[in-house]
Image (cartoon, rainbow, N blue to C red):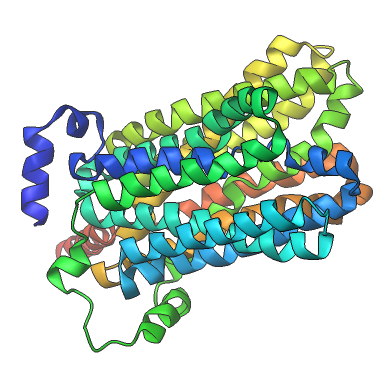
Length: 434
């Protein structure tokens, strides 16, 4: 099977040549549409609920509850794929989203029932990680190694493009035409369309289902437990999870304090929002670029130098540029776009991490990586809550930058098994010469 897929990539349909595994193409399209529906309210739900009568603190708590279930389901996604297969895992995500969304929009919001909002929005939070991250695990199993960096780059392109770009653009149009509530209801339509393409139209057979690599007698609970025990058996997977948390820590921390700091240097919040949007256009483009570069330059090298070191440098520059250049919007935007590009420099981590372990542990390894993606939501704001009053904006920026430089050091330990073998062979040759 591996040999056939390699031949397919070399023979090359157009999709294979640009890095999308052609046998999974409909899945990529489905993720794009699903995430468009899932993310259409992210940019405006909180201020809308505040207008309806909730406090800022209540909306923050609501978002936190949503983030908790995102982290939990992100962790479960990989091991569930190995326990029950990707299609069933993705269907669980669709069901969670639809049930939670119907209760949230149909009952909680109209009555402004805050007690009902929290659990229903939290149920909805189980949806996209089980759907999208399960498909990411599917990609890691069904893509040849030499194509895997590009394949995961395309995954993050459609994921972010749907969640942060198409969803926002669609909402800006739909709210004006149909209003907030109808726009929320329309999310279900997009989610179901995306699910149809990714689960039904996508006919690819998952390798574990196909080859039976997982022992049929192995209990599903044991597979779930594997998502924890792998941390002890494969310490490098734990390191990868930590690096993944650091990856987007500043992304969730910056919106809480950076607009206030920039305002002190003549950059208004509305201008900052435009800069923020431009940053993520840069980010989705570089998701692809670093996917390609990772396959050429090396996954570990790309994450180290472009991801970790790059983010460390440009995180500091986002603080000092407004001071040195007196709030120059153009320069701040350029630095912001470079920072957003370097956030994408961590994309090859999704190819590197499952390659650190054997086939039977790929799902568990991806679960840890996905858990890191969920925990980013808490670590960034948590750092702000813990340190902002103590060290201020400058100190906090240095903390965030320091974490990236730590991530660069940690990433050097993420050597592939063949790299470790080469190292051992060199040692043996040296000893034999001596």
